[in-house]
Image 1 (cartoon, rainbow, N blue to C red):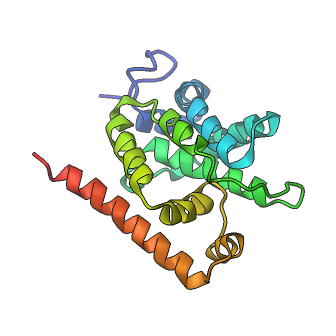
Image 2 (image 1 turned 90 degrees about the horizontal axis):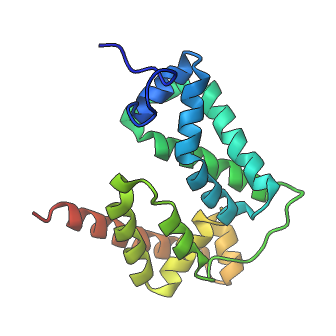
Length: 194
């Protein structure tokens, strides 16, 4: 059976992977369907990292143009289409943030990340995992949560985090390791429950 074409199928019928496959063959309607599904999530992530405004919207468009050009490179064994797009969006936002024309802002400690993390869970199949991740992040000690947020949402390197928090580099690395271990444990313990 041939995959459904986005041009003659309701977008709810085509899976994300099918849409990417259609994009790789030049189907612009598949790109439109994928854009409709994920543009709000990508915009929320980009705005959290790079700030609000027309530049954030431009970055979303850039992500989808890149996805269009690289659709043939998508590998489902490496993750979902949403994760593939979010990773591209995060990279674009971090590049934008680090560019010479964008000044660094402080952040990560204002709690707005909680609302935006919840916002990214618009896809029902990810809602449970996202809620678990959010709950685990909230329960982390403040020092562990701060290094994760500075690294993820602000794109700071371990050295930059150490400088920002005025702590040794080794402390940053140990806090990141401890926080990631807590996240891994929370996720894996939930998966083994009957």
